[in-house]
Amino acid sequence: MSDKFFLDTNIFAYIFDESAPDKRQLAVGLVDHALATNEGVISFQVAQEFISLAFRRFRPPLSSTEAEQFLAMTLGPLLAVQSSHVLYWEALHLSRRYSLSWYDSLVVAAALEANCRILYTEDLQHGQKFDNLSVQNPFL
Image (cartoon, rainbow, N blue to C red; front, side, top):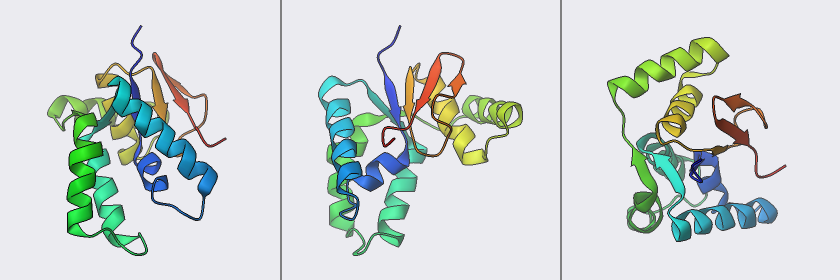
């Protein structure tokens, strides 16, 4: 069985959230573990969502230089799943079968495509299963 795990966008957002120090510490630990072990995975969707969030919602927003550095040092090494017709078909199937939003179904489909065993996210039900993929909310 694979030891790979998928990190959703909210994990990266908490790295920059000084108002939630406990969540920030957990997020930093997960990302550090992902980078150190090469077991962490993200999709291009997660990278896109994070950078958009960092420019629109962070106070202060990340600068272009800071975003480039975070992309090069953190997001880039974890990028493993690209958008494809197959990914979209699987996401549509998952959305219909489990009543997921489009973006949540894309994340689940990407985690399944990467053969991940765990999906770390706050956006889905803790303990929910999708085949061999288990959802875990690391902040509970």
